[in-house]
Each structure stands twice: as structure tokens, then as C-alpha cells.
Amino acid sequence: MKTKILCLLVLGMAPTVTTAQLGPTVVTIAPPTGLAAKPGETAKATLTVTVASGYHANSDKPNDEFLIPFSLKWNSGPAEVVSVTYPKTQTLKLGFSAKPVSVFTGTFDIVTQFKVPSDAPPGPAVVKGKLRYQACDDRSCLPPKTVEVSLPTTIGK
Image 1 (cartoon, helix red, strand yellow):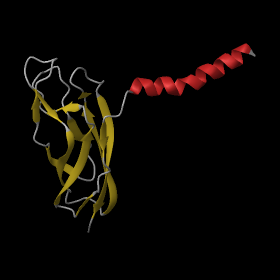
Image 2 (tube, helix red, strand yellow):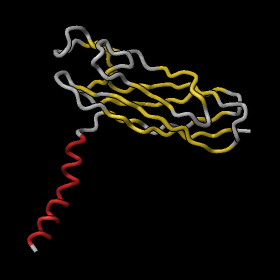
Image 3 (cartoon, one colour):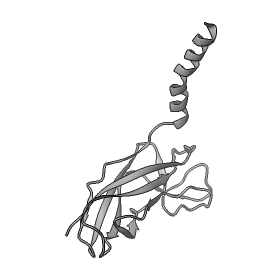
Image 4 (spheres, helix red, strand yellow):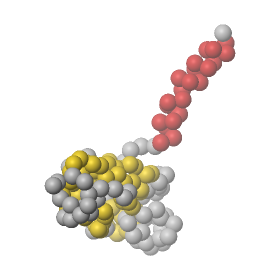
């Protein structure tokens, strides 16, 4: 009986421990509106990202090699990536770095230009990718995170 109670207590605490280890959510991504294009065409998709007040995320081109860059990588699929354009960075002087740090703050857009292959079959599809970043405040950084991103896609005729 004591063993069963102990097991229930340990199992009941597991979700709390797991959640506490993940840390706060300081970067959010708005659901993308989707991509629509015909075979052979190019189209742009915008991913809107918000970094919570009091935090920043290292930019896609951080000034120090030990900083984790902001990175959006799309998997191969119904549309091919032509380019990914990140927003203009801000430069902050922070206590942990001798030189200014290149960061993103607030709400910003990442724009990806896709090309639909000429032989792409028409119909609905999904382009999947991963957004990797590291959020920090002015004294310390949270562990790096990788977030799955799905872009609803419609290939026209």
C-alpha cells in the first residue's frame, strides 16, 4: 500500500517537474496565414515572431561565436526556399559581453520567398520547418529552443 501511494505521489509530481525544466515561454510565433502559388511561381510567406518585454533573442548573425543564432530552416517539400529575410537587428551593450550584441526584440517578421516546382501536384500541402533561437535578458540566457513551424500551402493549377 505504501509503495502504491509513493508511486502515485511521484507520478503526480512528474508534470510539474517537466514543466519547470522547460522555463518560461518568452518567444511566441503567430500562426502563419499560408502560402498559395501555382507550379513555377514564387510566393512569400511571413512568420511573425514576438519576444516578450525584458528579453531579446540573438540575431541571425550574432557578434560572438558562443551566441546561438536565430535560425529558420524549412524542410524540402511542396515549395523550395529561395531566400529567408530576417529583420533589421538592434545592437545592445550587455554585461556578459565585451562588445555590443546583435539582437531581435519586440515583434518582427521573418519573410521567406518560396518557389513552387513546375512539376508540383496541385492541391493542399504543408511546408514544415524549424525555428531555433536563444532568448536572454540583460544578465543571463535561457537554454536554446527549437520550435516546429508548419506553413499551410495551396498549390494551384
